[in-house]
Picture 1 (cartoon, one colour):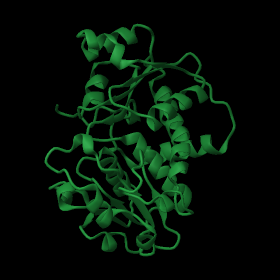
Picture 2 (cartoon, one colour):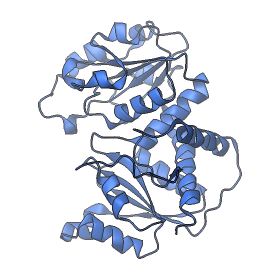
Picture 3 (cartoon, one colour):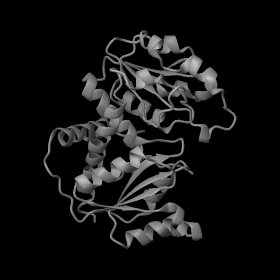
Picture 4 (tube, helix red, strand yellow):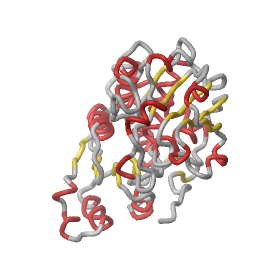
Length: 316
């Protein structure tokens, strides 16, 4: 499926939220700033009468739940479509289902699908004034996760310019990694390291302005931020590896933590596989901001949805 990265912006305004690739720095900063306002304020934000439909064709706990909470916090209604028991199981196409829900005066679709570009395809098909958010499309992108990670880094580190950030694990299959790299480069991170076995690194990694390290000790040395990724076993075909040997070489434990800066923050998009990519004492330790990421995800998704509602207001 050919992905149109430019469909999310019209007349300089964000109309859909589909990818970090090609997203201007000003829009990324607007989202982070608005999320900060929501996070630091108990003010009630009212978008009453708006309806958000959740279409998750893949499993989710954190993303789906925080979208539902974020929707309720901005006084909108959340419809959770049970995909397994929906009419798609009877042969209805995704677009026919979208048009049916659209007829119920739905204003926004939050979509997760295993096929890259599905959210973009839906965005091209919905009526004017209706927004689509990509909640993860295969191994392509996961833009809202990247945004909450940017918010987390800013909250704990301030600016990005002097930061050395190491992303460790299955870069090849990770939609989170791709969105992270796009966002970090746009925000001017000083150095982005990708760390992992060669067969879990994209062949074209040179195109992404990153430094690759096969050796984890070198890859996380003096890092300000370490972002651990899980092995995407459900997307692996030729790259299956031993979990025991993976932990020996790439598991983040207390001894490896000593190689990073003392005030390093440890992040993980979840779900965590303890004893595979990270030791429990690190995941639950003083440098970990993993649960903060989940909490920040509510404010960030509130920000994204409110911006989209504002920008689509006159078209609806």
